[in-house]
Length: 135
Image 1: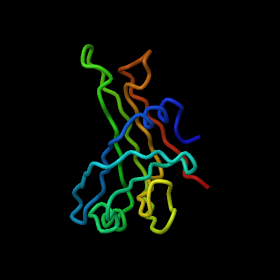
Image 2: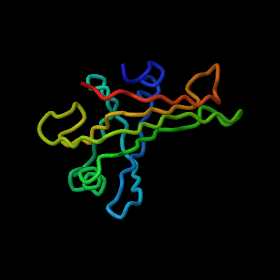
Image 3: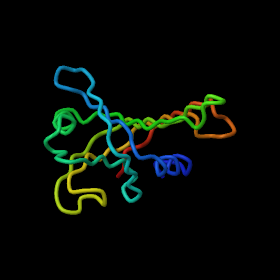
């Protein structure tokens, strides 16, 4: 399994994340997007209006290395940030029913996952792990 139960539960409770792509000039391009965990594929599916006409789509087509982040504050008193960063490879999909989330999808295949604040017993812990490519 690519994601832990705690990570899946956290992703299911979130609505927004940010995807970072690499622009042609080498600088990062970061945009807010909806959070859609795809349990069948064990991926993050990024969707949006006219997605294939977007800068993030063009960037991912030229360089599939992406990073996806979701974070929030579990509380402010005490201060408890939590989140997940997923570094991986983008797959661009177009067509009817390519995903339960839309007809144009940037599918993020995880290669490295970093989490913080998801373990209530150790809220300051940073957990890092590599993910083997599927198949």
